[in-house]
Image (tube, rainbow, N blue to C red; front, side, top):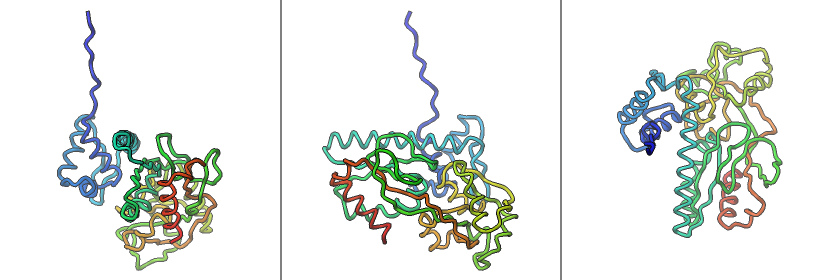
Length: 301
């Protein structure tokens, strides 16, 4: 007697893609803009996923979304799965077309704030290079996966890889004008006692080291919102949920536009930083040479 195969009851795929965008932006509106759909469509897709699970994924507030327990980790795993599908599609396209696809693995915070806004210029200058991004998450080391080169955070050297410094740590507190009035800056560091701090799970020493740098090692904030992704921490700061420690290089455009500002003056500078890393033999690859020269030129500029 043959056995009947019972497939797993997967969550609906399209709502998961919409949910991942909403979790990354902490905003239905921004997710809708990214996906070119209406805000109502995003809300309905997330609601369908919540119905599937039987519990809420976000707390809806007037200033944005707050992930419920487990939501951030689930969104991170969904993002990884979507990236792998994109990589598989790119590999198949390259195989059938005979074209050269250059896959760069980059942290989500670095990619969303520093790299992606500059990519249209790269594609316009070098249309012959099909550059694809694979995400790595904001922890001490990037994850495994198929890629040609990667952006690494830490301190060189790394075994078996060439490493070229892009920029070192320059961490400063940032927040939205809705949380503090920019006209009052710089604020005294003691004002942080009554404000929520946004922290990264993988870097618990960032805030203590900044307070030590500021000369007030005993101060802590009113509470901490802890996220796994730097990009999500930036979104939470923009939504007015608290004060985040931001990389100045990541946020140069946001600071210039005024969506974020630096309310407290001390800057924590460390020897760790962001590097472009790659295997030695990739240095002779024409597509990689073009990208390497471009990204180093962007840093120098």
